[in-house]
Image (cartoon, rainbow, N blue to C red):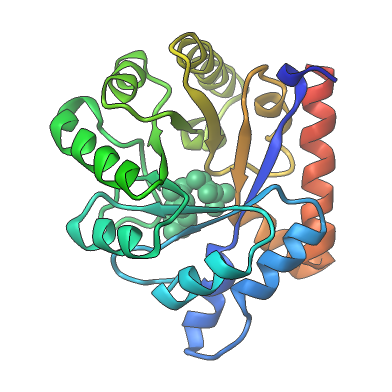
Length: 248
Ligand SMILES: CC(=O)[C@@H](O)[C@H](O)COP(=O)(O)O
Ligand SMILES: NCC(=O)COP(=O)(O)O
């Protein structure tokens, strides 16, 4: 397998915390899910500290940072509060995401083009404490070029429009946009990750795009884990994406 066929799985454990927060209990523990995910082949753990703290809490982030064997991908909005928190814990990998308090989930990519100075300053601040920053953006050439200009070494392409497509033709169009976005980002020397809304039944065409470094997958995986267990759900997803990437 060449480097172009190699693909990593980042497991997002936010929705383990969603279940815990629904009752204010101590269970289920997102850390247990993360450690099980690592044992089952996850290459990294993703978690999103939302402004409204609907799932992940600061304590989860602190514990996770010290306990993981792989690496923690810390997702956060570009706010002073989050920047100060990320600086205080010296998060090694930070993904800057757009956030709107009322949204059900992350609806689109970060508008880097429309706020270059602000994002550049955030990337620099985080870089000063040793964080590698990724920007969660749409597969849009102008946003990718802006990501490069602000100094981010990596991007994560938002795959939500592909995942939400209502027809095969729409899915094919969105997949082509992702493929073009990956090619554009690679040409600019960026590390390219992707994620959002990926499921066992729609992940393979994305995993097959050469040059994608990592897929971040959460909601569908946590849902499947309810029926098959966390380790089995992770192992199944890992096997699917590695095989799809190898086929190309
Ligand atoms: C940025 C991203 O895509 C994930 O962190 C996702 O947002 C997590 O799930 P929720 O959007 O449901 O919080
Ligand atoms: N950045 C995307 C992510 O971490 C997982 O998103 P989802 O699979 O929960 O939609």
